[in-house]
Image (cartoon, rainbow over all chains, first blue to last red; front, top):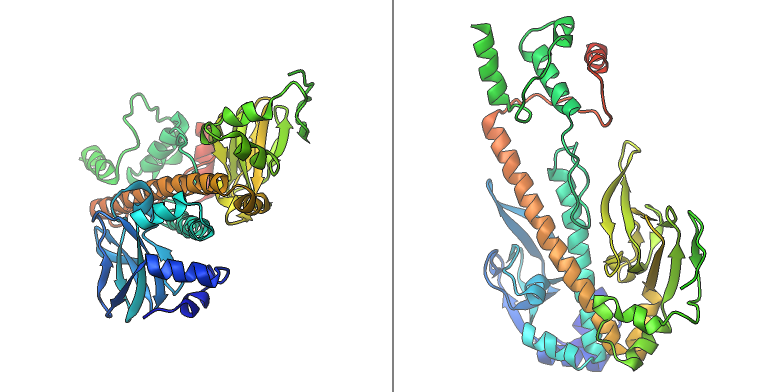
Length: 214
Length: 202
């Protein structure tokens, strides 16, 4: 049984009134999870968000190299709110790292709280926004670590990538010439790119090299 | 509207008699259906700013707690990279918003925002949003709700970009585990400069 005082101890709910916390507890469904249990699975439809009350959760994403943990969540965290907002699928899987108590709030309850514009609805909405903003900032930081160093940092809005200039292409060709074809710098200076279809991949460069050296 | 604007001029101003602030708010999609009472509550806590072309509205690295609604004109969003060069990453036309996250979770500005044309923006900061929760809960919920939708959309976009990058990395590793790093220049190079660069690097 979760009581208001437990929620009050969490930073996200410190400013909620007693009555609001009681209402939240009445509106939400408690879930008692054992270690290693899954709270939700990536790609599954979602219609609720979760508040972690006690324990620790791990957020896991599927990659080509298997499932990779991307974040751990501590008590007071709100998660799963994306599916609540855009009715999309779960963007990640979440599992319990230890025994956990979680409150589940469905979309219906969330929307009812908001439609009434109750102080509780507004406060919870603000916490949901904060959770989303922090997840977005973490995702932007993560994108920077997986992107090649030359690409621009992620834009907050869609933007065009820097076009590949002829000089970029020429630079790549000349470097290839010097590094892999054994040309001298003087010879490389006389290279003229007459036709290109993008910078050659390493495999292409290797096959060209073997053709040239035959 | 007869306002004389000088280049690189940014001002906080009171709307002139000729301008109907309610109509300006209604021209923004987010507020198009606000009733009179909500409009009045919102107008009581926003700040209007106007800039000439070239005026800097926000600077990267400054503390930010304000969301801006572009009421007229076009803004340029520019990011300074580690090498000191500044790049435009987006243009924001009238009717769109920027800095939405800051009015809920204040943080350092991640970009510099410059007016490309004569531009008018309407600012809502964290304190005014807090006040609005008392004076007009429905308007506060409307603003917070649209911030949540914007953030959710971007989260999905960034997630997709991360997945794309990870997939590309796996593909690159499969193709060539010892791919040579490629020289890349941030500026335009002539052939001789490229040769000099390679020579200089030994």
